[in-house]
Image 1 (cartoon, rainbow, N blue to C red):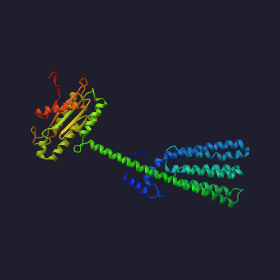
Image 2: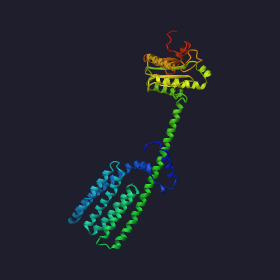
Image 3: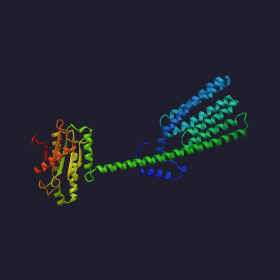
Image 4: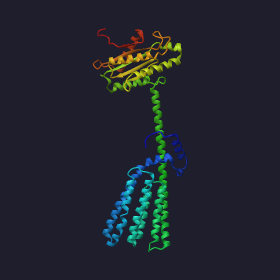
Length: 407
């Protein structure tokens, strides 16, 4: 059974059943379907194995009878014994894969009827001492099926009723037995079969209770895992903009570099909203928050989907990591972000650059033939380029240039 959260109505019913007495457990509706889905493979395997062994024992018994018994008696057993294998094979075939509920029920009750009838008729046809012996064997076969088959109680009661009915019928026609003795023998065996049915019912109820406990435990584990996943997402997500936060970006950087980013193309963009403090002071923090959300969305939509990483790094700063991007491609993406923010025309009347929100971006790229840079070094270079963009008048993209040798 898959680890998953169950609907509240299902779990409420599970709790109700587990809170009551074990003997009162009754599975209905969706719970019964889930239980059948959970128990079917094991039940089917047991039924197929039992049917196979019954066929093998039937063939073995016929072979031994042919060797040990007089020819006339052995020949009288062959025809009724031939009823058993097709009935058992048909039942086993039905249980090779899940089928309609009515067909499974028919395969058990109908198959068992012909199996029990075959065993009984073998003794009836042989007569004498074999008459009652095979009727007892028939009851033994029914009893083993009742104990082993984890099927609904109604099916079990049907098999028990068929076995006792066939036993009483043939004993009443037994020329060597009086009517009173036949009834007394039937009542004697009935007590044992009834006890077996009760035991089978108890086993079914305990199996259902085990299923309910497992379902509750699995649902609680799934619920806990889901809650932990939500907490993990919250811990790694900026609550205002919905993009990753600084912690997640640091983890991502270390993971990327650990997975072999060293020596490969990589770039970082450090983005900063120009005169954001003035925007907050003039228009209020609500408008500032709206600006941050809009800018975060523009940045996210401007990068390469499922490849690049965007995070809110500080108050109005955003860090973008571009795995596999060279300097030219990184500059192109940065310019696309800057133009996207400018085109949005978000109001910032206090800006020294324009009456709308603008973005300054510093770009640092790592080329394969350059000296290997750590994520911290690459980020420091992007930050230095951002500082130059601010000094140069804001609302621009500036590439980091390494200092010339000897400077």
